[in-house]
Image 1 (cartoon, rainbow, N blue to C red):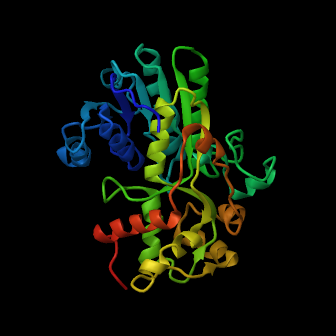
Image 2 (cartoon, rainbow, N blue to C red):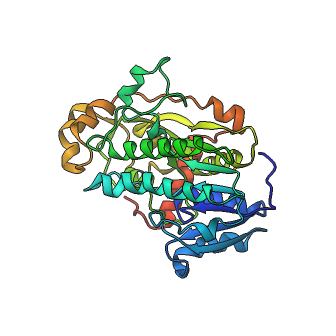
Image 3 (tube, one colour):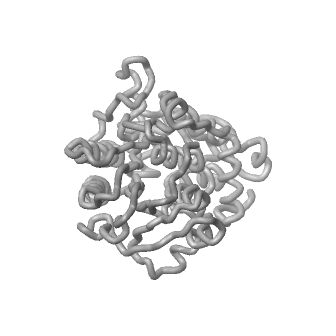
Length: 354
């Protein structure tokens, strides 16, 4: 890991989120002062996990009132900061109005934060939490890649408001960030493009789509089988180290594909079998694609038959070489990540034994 400069504070949006919590821990443990803009800084229950991190560290955390879509609201939190981490963005699949619930908060929120960076002379680097969803929309896109692998050079061109709107929101938000960054020369932008983020949360009742997925592996929802939807996964703790390395490695630049493992839902579930297979109804077989195609829209309206056709039983393959070479990352085994996450969910009462 690079040397962390503790002289200037840093600001991190979305500090109470799943990913940001571990970034905050890394920074606080290094002795950094963290400015955390939140909607309600007077809510001790919402902030208790971050306060506990600060108390156990040599760093300090300060809370400020701000909102992603409120222009100018980040001014106080950003003042005097050297680095800005922008992690705040909605992550939900089941939405009624994708433009209002996904695209506007992602794109306009990014614009709001970066326009404030333009007004804050102390900031020299912004680390943006983008997503591999800005690289691809469906697994079928893999066939169109130059070498049969997703890399940082590739942009998602298959998603839209009508199809995979979450992926579309991440794509337009990152494009907005690069447009603003290239229009000036005082600060530089480093984008982090993680795959599906798994692992334990700083908040043991974290609200993340990945928790919903893993919960289904242990509560019987996938007892008859798991669909083989290919994707990449990364441990949230490794992802936090990627953000810190992107912030403090002078040579860090551009987009960075943060991917620990190329896998699928069934492989993830099977990683849990050795330790938890006797006590929990963890899936042991693949659900056939025709059955997924038949039932998916009835179980989840967001899981359209088009999505099933373009993703189930199709592999996902991503290149993480740049993150290893330039950010110095090493990725922990997927089984370790899955077991740590599942055990935390057991301890937090997500499900009962079968």
